[in-house]
Image 1 (tube, rainbow, N blue to C red):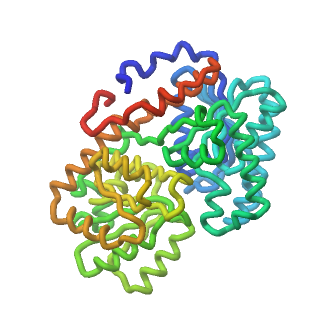
Image 2: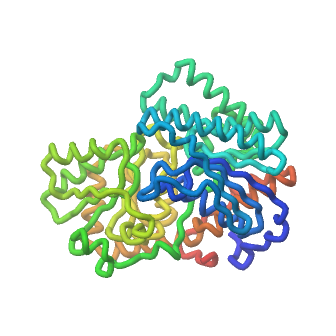
Amino acid sequence: MKNKNHLFQKKLSVQDDRLLIVTRFYPPDFAATGQFIEELAVYLSCCGVNVRVFTGQPGYAFQSDAAPNRESSDNLLVRRTRISRIWSNRIRGRVVNGVLFWLRSFIHLVKAAFWCKTLLLTTEPPYLPLLGYLINRITGIPYICLLYDLYPDVAVELNVINQKHWLVKIWDWLNVQTWKHAQQVIVLSSTMKERVVAKCPEIRDRVTVIHSWANPRWILPVKKQDNAFAATHNLVDRFTVLYSGNMGRCHDMETIIEAAHLLQAEPIQFVFIGGGPKKQECQDLVASLGLTNCLFLPYQEKENLPYSLTACDLALVSLLPGMEGLIAPSKLYGMLAAGRPIAAICEPHSYLRQILDEAGCGQAITNQDSVSLVKFIRQLAADPLLARQMGEAGRNYLLANFTLEIIGQQYLQVLHSEQNGKVHHTDLNSQPIHAPGSLHDR
């Protein structure tokens, strides 16, 4: 990794860049994808890239029913369309609003073609990258796909649709065509790259793994004794296990609830912060088991996250079997910044295991092995020194590998390779991940 003194070396060379980012979610939405895009857009604009963002009005905000249709500062311009909020129904509405956002984005991109030099399209909604292919065919503008998740694969794994369904076949074909013509395809994990390359082997050299990140200057390892959030919810004096974020259909919540069941007679508190399709199922299961060691809280305002994430002694991240490489839990990086040990409930071949092993910051638990999770919880509860050492190792690992300054430079490298007509994917993907203690990037 480069020394921090070199982080802004390329600023002068990108002054004429014009990047248009298209994504449905953007703050004040609290969706993680939107938060990441905002931080990335601000970073790139500070590096001299002229950035425009086309997005929707907030659909998952706390107090903001609407945001300004247009916001600008220095090299960053944000445009929002209201058309993506026409139908508010949570499930059908998301599909319909996603399609409407796609159509509105197409119109916007046609109009913006004279300005745009490069497109960056996310998978919010999942079929958004197809726009890049169409606009490229019409205008010749190069595009980059940023894949947060892989559809229709997620829907197939969740048994929402059969793999042999005609819609799946068409969607897969469209994905391949879109990836083939993209200048670059960015994925969030090594296993996601394996999935993409398996479907489209000819683009192996244009698939780049770039992880998400967290801000270690914002999320600090606050002691529970000094944490007002922990005090408010009576978490200071009890060993606390935290699951924070979306309790979605792709997450293994069952192993966690079973662990809570096995520990119900011990002074261990489980805290679930967030929402999602499985939240009510989890609450119903907890009630049916008569558990008193589980606390459910809503999503927290962004300013509270540094305190909610550190109001625990162990943080959890989970994926259902079959989801490896289809999604990448972004909550991992905030947990690393919080300086708490991490237990990742995942498959044996998960990239999460590699990160935890190299960082020395926790333990990977195989799905449905609640007994091993319980054993790890008991071990940490009985050995606070070990828990502190693991937490510190995780934060050091993040400082060396997953800060915005480090990840932002990787995005700049992708943009440069696209502009120069050269692909430097091997430089990015072969960069060694630093072990804990390699803090020269701090």
